[in-house]
Amino acid sequence: MGEKMKLFLIDWIATNEKKERCLLRKQGRKISWLSCLLLLPFFALSQLQVAPVFSDNMVLQRDAIVRVWGKATPGEKVEVHFAGQTKKVVVAKDSSWSVSFPKQKATGKPRIMQVKAGREMRTLKDILVGDVWLLSGQSNMEWPMAREAHWQAEKMEAQQPLIRFANPPPAGRSVYGVAYNDSLNSRLTKERFYDWNGWQVSDSTTLRNMSAVGYYFAKAIIEKEAVPIGLINLSIGGAPLETFISREALANSKRFVNKVMGNWLENPHLPEWTRERGMQNVGNNPGGYKDDLGLNHAYKPGFAFEAGVKPLLPFPIKGVLWYQGESNSLERERVEEYGDLLQLLIDDYRKAWKKPAMPFYWVQLSSIDTANYKSQYWPQFRDNQRKLLAEVKNSGMAVTSDIGFRNDVHPTNKKAVGERLARWALRQVYGHDLVPSGPLPLQAIYKEGKIVLSFHYATTLQTADGKPLRGFSLDGETGVEAAIDNNTVVIISDQKPTH
Image 1 (cartoon, helix red, strand yellow):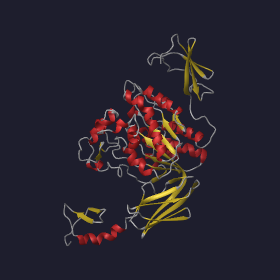
Image 2 (image 1 turned 45 degrees about the vertical axis):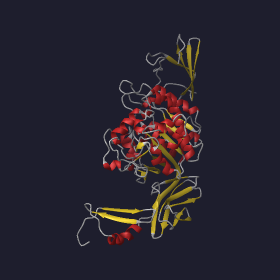
Image 3 (image 1 turned 90 degrees about the vertical axis):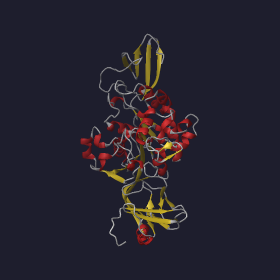
Image 4 (image 1 turned 90 degrees about the horizontal axis):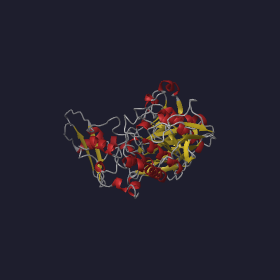
């Protein structure tokens, strides 16, 4: 050790046979066991771990058992202090530990949690108790406040101490049709895929990268309820629905079991576009992390569930906000199955959290010009999303047809989206007497040369701008005149529509 060396990598590996080895490398060179033994005290200081979802500024779910868990040295005693109570446990042989605290009432008064094991202690500060909502889906849910239409005005109100969010970026975010580098490939494991970087309090700096939909949802709830709102954002740009469903749920579904059979990159039962993107990113990396379904990737069936949802399951949440569908809308077969596939996901999440009536609110796809985007199936897709409302209890849907762009799948007015989702929650979860949605089609009846359309939530039906109705068609190509009659819409037609 007389040689002066710059040590830049320390690997510590402990096997089940309790054999330990320590390597310090400098240009491929190894140093002696004696040097490793001298470093053991430093390693001993980093054995206590708390699950990544726990950090300063977090929100815990009110009226639910508070479970705290992590890892430490087997056989060691762990003490957790929170809310005036202390819980103790001995670390299991697999290094895991967990304790539980009684249900807590909502409070905006900051609390502290201390976790001790031997000489180590972790102190988590500024913890609130309120409602925690899981955000998931594609880039429209991921869409940050800094790119939202109202950002310049809203950042003046960004100081929202009751809004807290965890925003762990997934591996490959903002990397598109190119091969992943070694750094990204190394993160394609369920343990490393999401980069948990702690909870943050909403202010003008942190808010820039926060989900805009989530922020406006939380703000609308707090304006009525004054309860802390925590948001956990697991959305992934471009991701298909299949990655967010557990592999077990897909395998146990007679209709969808074929989605988890064989190499996912070659599976025709998965969206073609996402398989192409997966091939671009990892297809030329045969040595990457994989299992019987093939190479790991954000779009692989079940992978986002395994990497994001499953590690959270001991952590109670209030409900789920969902904004996804573009990647499942490009092929007729994918469109026709989407309603049942989304219902499978909802059932999967409710079962996983052991909450059979857990609130689940989704966003209907917006309007877009079919000339510039493969959206010829979007009308059917939107209707399938609407029909699911009648099948799923404690659910709601935010309509966005009025805020879409002709040539972009990313409407930047996320304020309307978040606030519309919040109306469903305010009515169903928080008990407010309000109309949760604009008019939603109920039925169409043809009688005596007229088509009469009736709606839910249409007691005072009118156009938003006061102008005559427009945008109606019977064949998808030719416009027809329509008029409001009381709380219905009437279309004059000599022929009965066939669909």
